[in-house]
Image (cartoon, rainbow, N blue to C red):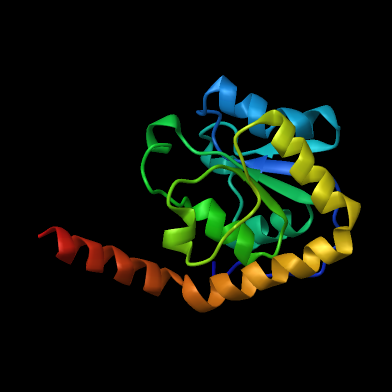
Length: 168
């Protein structure tokens, strides 16, 4: 998340970036509440290299959304897995609601409360964030700073090598 940082830009609407390769159930839980409120943008829905943003462009995109959403492939739901999108979005300081990530607290190193497993809970989290948006942005700064201090790409690669050593 080092290249992803808060930019203090005007924010509007909701967004998701990622391929359309997640199950319908997860899309209904995570994305449908945002889509139903309007002003929703889904980028990088298809594998089209010309549509992908640069790292700076993606950071700016995150910084222009009121809330960014995250999903994970179904085959990774049962294993401890933190997608790169999690670190990017938190690094950008953007409010982020994600499908429940197994092992998140252990692997991230602190509790992250904006995880969901139901449409109703997604709607609750959206309202919680939007009801006092300025405070929500302040809260996200804590996660941004923590991500920058504890989850650089160098540190993440080091933890992968440590895990591989444990396995051998």
